Length: 147
Length: 191
Image 1 (cartoon, rainbow over the protein chains, first blue to last red):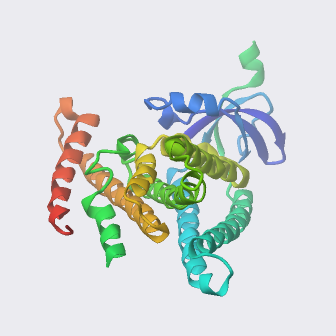
Image 2: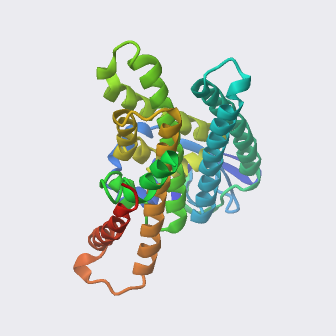
């Protein structure tokens, strides 16, 4: 998967890129209009900058599909597992608490989701630092576009 | 035994996609690769499970005691949209690249009619708390099963000689129809 973006700033071997709303997969999507309202603000991501693109350059970024699929499976798999474990534990511990079974399950669910959230947050923050996506092509240099 | 029947029925017999033809948009849109299908399936299963819990709580703790049953549809829509919004905010916070990559995923879940149907059906069938959860998880797994099977078939179809006129959505809908017929075979399992 490739994405286009505009280099906002650079620092050593990294660049901060303002990516456009849609990935190439979304171009022909019939439900694309659903996203327009939501994602009008562009996202900033940090990428590796082996081509030494400078601020103002339009660049192309390579984003491997499998990497995202695995991350998504991990993210939603963990959240789903945590919810089920939380609900189950809450229900099991209900007789020990001054709560009804449904209230205890709900409490268990909330606790499990918070714990899973903290775990995922730490995991992805650590991962974001080491696995940045590279700039693979400088489409237009800043000067060229304005000239 | 009753819980097992609800679970199995939600996955195989009353499969939301193949029996009721609900959630067809993500079913067709995200079933080109098995990896994407698994992540979409897990995302929908997670949202369905949480929706089942939260909608039961809202229905039984607020709407029914205060005789506000007529607000069910509005409140369930709000529950689903808020849940997905929360997940979206969480993902944007922890991993902006992943949030970017999600693209259409999360809006597709918000507008997935099968999730809304789940909340309404659990209320109509007057399921208790545990039954609602089992129904939610089972329905999500049913969706996941259907979308993974579809993705596996579509990956194979890439290597098949499909007539030009049927390429894309045409052959996908024919496959979905045949899968629905196959799943009809499960209908006698539980009465």
